[in-house]
Image (cartoon, rainbow, N blue to C red):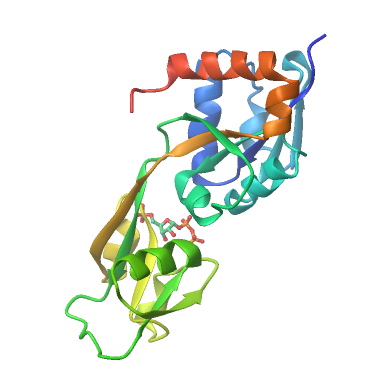
Length: 211
Ligand code: PRP
């Protein structure tokens, strides 16, 4: 019998596309996989265990080795750059981009502007590279609120359809980086379970849309 593979799946917007990709790669995931509120889902037929984590936490589970593999957005990888995990495959799903946004025609003050974001590391690096001094304010969600109520001048956030910006009267000011989801692995798991992991990577690589 092959070794158990534990995979950290991000709950939320990536989940559905990732599950679809696994099914296309011929992994037998039961229908209740998608609707369950369970946080640990065992698939004995595949000798696989899925743990359902917050997207920002996937790299943590993989780094500590409680998950062998994980699916994480490139945004999370950039924010959590120091994590000891390897990126194995660009799954080319959940495409979006990181951007700077704000109110249209907002005046640029001379003093350091405030930037609200879920991605403080990405934002600091970006503005440092631009030679702009800003104050970063970390939020955990609904980032678009910040400029609307005067907490920040601008935001750094994910833009997918652009609907959230539009409905809140905000505009994209700068494009930072394109984002897709990646398959990541714990380095020790990769050494110990290389055959199983290579099989999964090969099967996924065959169904991934070309990047
Ligand atoms: C993300 C992101 C934006 C929105 C962008 O938030 O932070 O708010 O989606 O998507 P759109 O361009 O298609 O409108 P998410 O829904 O993940 O929730 P959050 O605000 O709690 O982070």
